[in-house]
Amino acid sequence: MDNFDLKKYLAEGKLYETINLDIEDDIAYLSGDSGEYEGEIEDGKTSFSVIYDDLDYRISDRYDESNIEDFLGRGHAFVELAKKYDHNWDVERDLVGITIKLKDLAEGKLLKEEVDVLGNEFLQDIQDTMKMYYKMDVDMDDIKNWVKFYYIDYNSEYDEGPGDVDYEGNEFGSEDYESEKKELVFDTAEREDFYMHLNPEADSTFPNLK
Image 1 (cartoon, rainbow, N blue to C red):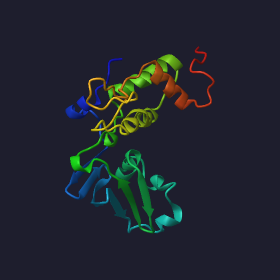
Image 2 (tube, one colour):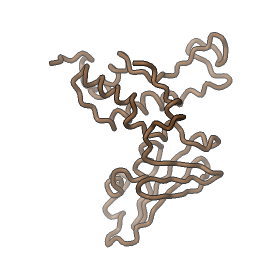
Image 3 (tube, rainbow, N blue to C red):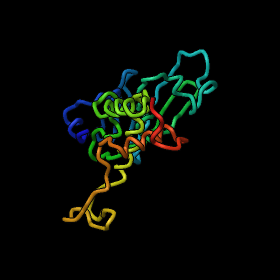
């Protein structure tokens, strides 16, 4: 397939977002279907919380970090946020909170990691390709999580700033510099990597197809 330009999609607003996270000065504003929240930014972290004062039981008696998402429910802004950031849960008797580690605060805008790419043409192509080659009906959430891990998280390790070098030692900006960043393409190597990710115990990336 042709290279998928994520920056272009971001600029054109074509990616579906389940939550919005805006940063103004030292305050973070989170909004989603479950409501609107705000938290103060300190040391690159911010926290959001909500109080439930109409329950007849203690939240912390039934839930903890391992299952609090079951209490909040799928699609809750905190649950979506947890998919995109390093986070810690705070579960108390009548309160649920989440603390996240922010990146690129100076830009004051959404990062690639903050974008829910569910439903765009790149993910649809991956799903169609896996169906064609392996007769697999891969869930879109699994594809989205793999794309974040395989491309976005990997590329975030490369700043491409002054002093950075490629695998041959060429400095960034030099005539011979060649970036090791991964492009958003899904060809043979990426397809086989994804297959092995889904089937870690498989002996081969060439299963017998019916």
